[in-house]
Image 1: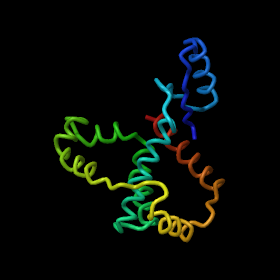
Image 2: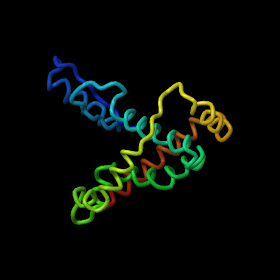
Image 3: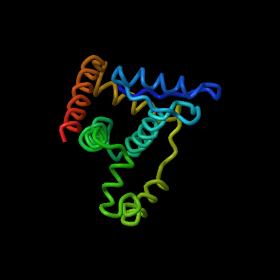
Image 4: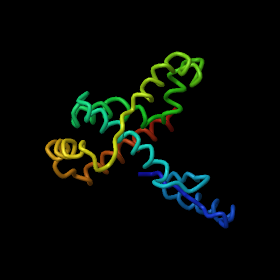
Length: 163
């Protein structure tokens, strides 16, 4: 993955930060400077939030593990390769931007947020969801995943630069 989350100490100089960011940029990475330390960093916390809601939806019987993965692969995955959630929903609000998006469907968003069930590690959902994941995927070929991900990211970058 190109992302590299940088977490400087209060003693890290601006010069060291600038040189570190440039070092990684020249190597094809995307260094993001975090303003403060946070357990799990930013990308993992966002991914864990999606995982938590995914577990909730499977646990509630709305979809199974494979179906949920297909939902992400055929909607958010491609969309978020091009633009993150803020840019995506800002675009979804049309001329009104993100504010317009929330004016249009903010009530639905709030109902979804209110509806989030309690999902905790070590609870009853684990047996069912772990079993489904093993049955559906076995051992995932990480080399294939990484090769395909790199090709997708390269293609998106090429398209963005061709405009």
